[in-house]
Image (cartoon, rainbow, N blue to C red):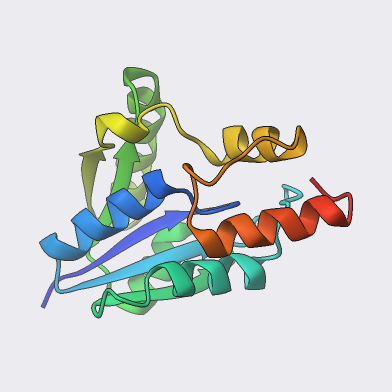
Length: 162
């Protein structure tokens, strides 16, 4: 059984992320969507909120598990038995950084392989940062995120957090 992990901050999860999740879930027996709790950044959503949004978005995909972690991604992958790291590439500019991460992860955990999935062209421009920026300026983000994520963004707008 092959377990893969798709790590990220998912602040918030977008339809581009979900595209990668759905495609990766068809490639591996189990896919762990790993939400990074990065203490160096100040996310819009708490790690618990991000995990809950992802669980709602992925509830129809039986082999997907959502979990959060602190620390090194490879340490979490090893603890969870993942042997493949899934990374999405939106553009050529993502490749250099992702390659460096893949090589570092492999040096730290020689049994881990990285699989790059090109984001579907319809989502190649999309990022969580773009979604947050659009939400900040009260733009309709429904085409970028699922209804539960849109509702969470609207709630943050009402409280002045976005």
